[in-house]
Length: 387
Image (cartoon, rainbow, N blue to C red; front, side, top):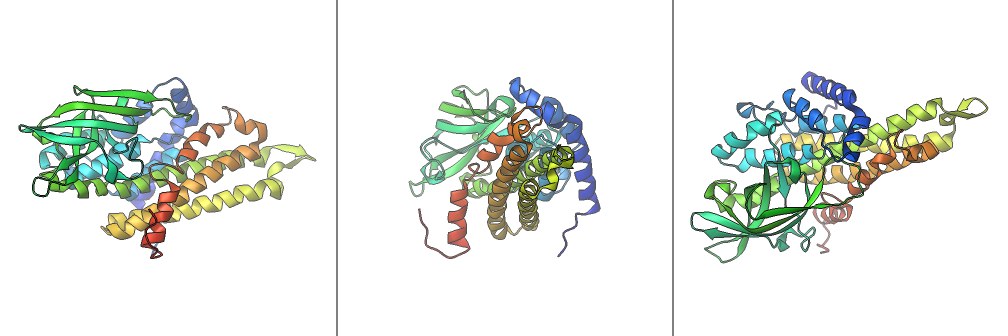
């Protein structure tokens, strides 16, 4: 057992950290409040190969795994630039395409995902289904050689920045008559696909949308994979990378908040010339938050290692635990940072309150803490299913 990164992973971490700090949280907030995207940072990260670290080399990627992509997610977040589309496009879409797409689909999409010139977002959540994907109402019907998609999706990230959206729908199995999941690559400018922006209380350059699919006509090759049988394994293929990279982004955000707060408390003096950080009422909460973030990072490392080793079932448990731990740790770290900074903590200038909405959302999405506890209770502790 080792907790050391390889020399190549160490170099990646250092390089991504340097890139993130060149842009910084001020850039991130400025873009978000102006209603703009982090286009320059995304393009440079793509040009330098960081967006495609988990994509095979034959498609223009770095040939690494989710361990490497988690490093990218964490270090950009630790620099104050938590990019949600890293989770959606390189982690979910690229993994699903690489594992279950046709060779033509891989050749068409993976090179653009690797260099950042293309983004593919992911649409599974629906207003009525919530966490229960078995109740998905978006339906795909055969139409000659192609398909017609109808339904609604909600909380879909980054549709305005993407060329395609990977839509999870349900199709009828001709042999059984039962509905089964299938994934479709839908151009975001397809006729019948409309969107409505959701106003969120989150400071982020990435927007959330409602999607409406009204008989969206697609060719046969829009179906992901060689057949409908690819649907269920393709759907699950994206879940572990999603949880691991979301957790990495949360851990990085926690690190960023603790670093900003520690710099402040080590130099702020109001009582007899001593720094406020010398008082345990200030330093202990920060130290506690730092411990929680570091514990989450260890579970992220374990989950990513298991996933890259092909141990999907074990990675599912570790990935869920990592997501839970990082969500709690990030929320604690940002809240603690705001508290120890006092009034300064609520200003835009000091750059911690700007993360409150995002870390609170991290305890809800992409899977809520309650559903993770249900999972652990059932699959680790052997309890009866509670829902």
